Structures are given as C-alpha cells and as structure tokens.
View 1 (cartoon, one colour):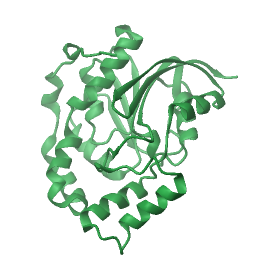
View 2: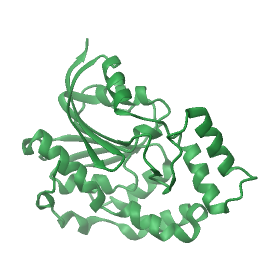
View 3: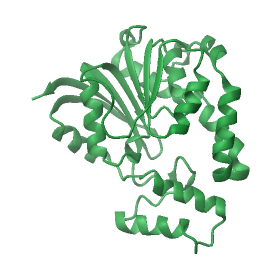
Length: 268
C-alpha cells in the first residue's frame, strides 16, 4: 500500500523539542554499548521521519476523521519520544506513552519538556497502567517481539482500546535477516532453543567477537526477543476474548509486517 501523505504533518512542533539534554543522556548511557557507533545510533533514535509512515498508513486505513485534538492515543514503546512527536505532528492531541526502560523515560521527559498533553511513563511490561477502554488509537511498532509474554501484551493492547478503537501493530517476522535494534544478523529463523544457545555463545566470554559486538548480542538476549508471526497474532487475538477485525495487513518493508486492527466489542 502506498500511504505517502507527508503533507498531513506539521513541522511547527519541532521547535519545542529539547534535544541537547536528551542527547547528553543518550551519549552517557549508550557509549559503553555502541562505542564508536554511538553517534550514529543516537541520530537514529532521535530521528522523527521513520515514524511518519506508521501514521500515514493508519490514516489511509481508518480515515482522517479519527485524527484530531480530542483523540486519546497510546504509544507503546516510545523510545526517545520521536513517535510521540510525530503523533502530535499528525494532529493528535492527548498522547500517552509507555516504556519498560528507565533511560527512555528520562530522555523523553527531557526531550518533550515543553510539549503540553504529552504523558510518557515507565511500566513493568506486563499490565498497562490504564483503565479499560481508555484509548482511541494504540500505536505498537516493534515492541511485541520484545515482550516477555506476547499473548498477554496483545490482550492488554485490546483491553485499553475503546470499542471501535484501532491498534496499529508492526513487527519483524522470524525470517527477517537483521535484528533491528542492533543491526546484527538475526537468528530468529532458528528453532527457539537453538537460537537462544547461539545468542548466549555469541555474547559470552569465550566469543571471538569484539566487546562491542558481544555487548550488542547480549542486548538482544536482555530484551527477550520473541519469534512473532501473523499467524500467532491471529491466534492470540482469537483467544483474547475481544471481538475484533483485522482491517489490513501489509509489508512495511522487506521482512516487516504492519497491520491495523479494530476492537469491535469487549470481552464476551
């Protein structure tokens, strides 16, 4: 699907972004991991443009009438806050976000200090700290594969959506050749136990790899990367107890699945 509609975005909100303090926090935290690659990594996580396609896609699927200042939006896995900024540029008003790592909350709070109605928070990655049927739109890009329990994660996404609310879900399937956060060769195509053994060996003390590469493989292990497929997503949705409709499924990029899901009713 071609959803190139960048004219929907306003760049005016970019003036509010507090980048210097956010960059300093990122540099201190990630230099031991990424070493001489750290500046490129930080540039990537602070970039805004990569997130615009997700909102363009959802706008095409559900219509422009859902993009307004009263819409309640949840960004699951807001990282450095770029997706929250793009949500505001897309015309959305009340923007909440959750992250499991403290560093991202600290960076995002610094970065978005001058934005009204932006609510980034930290949680434990299990039960979302929100009431049932609170959000009209939930954006989840490359988060479900890092959750400890993907089935519970998807159930929680559906729980906090309003009836008629929309979930935008994006993830790499298991045959994607690259682990997206580290840019290392992916081992997701292997059987689960074999894949975990290989990751532990590559990041272990006897690995012949450089310390920087070993640290990046260790970060894959620590983020609990899961093997996700569209088939498993369909099964988890069916078992969630929430009536739903998968409105569209597409390839956002080679190896990347993007889909739009509507919540039709509460638990039966």
